[in-house]
Length: 85
Ligand SMILES: [Zn+2]
Image 1 (cartoon, rainbow, N blue to C red):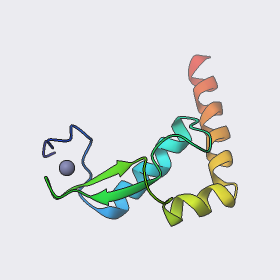
Image 2 (image 1 turned 90 degrees about the vertical axis):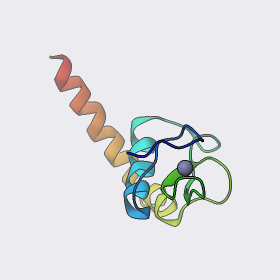
Image 3 (image 1 turned 120 degrees about the vertical axis):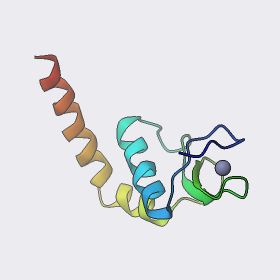
């Protein structure tokens, strides 16, 4: 992985960065106003980063709207519970 001056995690492609964006929202409950909302291509390193400013990514927006985020989050909570057993 190439290190970026922004110190952000870099993703090699837009689709991988989108996956990471969704994953981040599953893992952490940001609510509606915080957390990364989109991805962008970095001019410094040529990779993709997550950003918390600007418009919401379309895939993330429909992910939340369709209830997929809640579904995944509940599934993950179960996985974590089972891990503790
Ligand atoms: Zn960068």
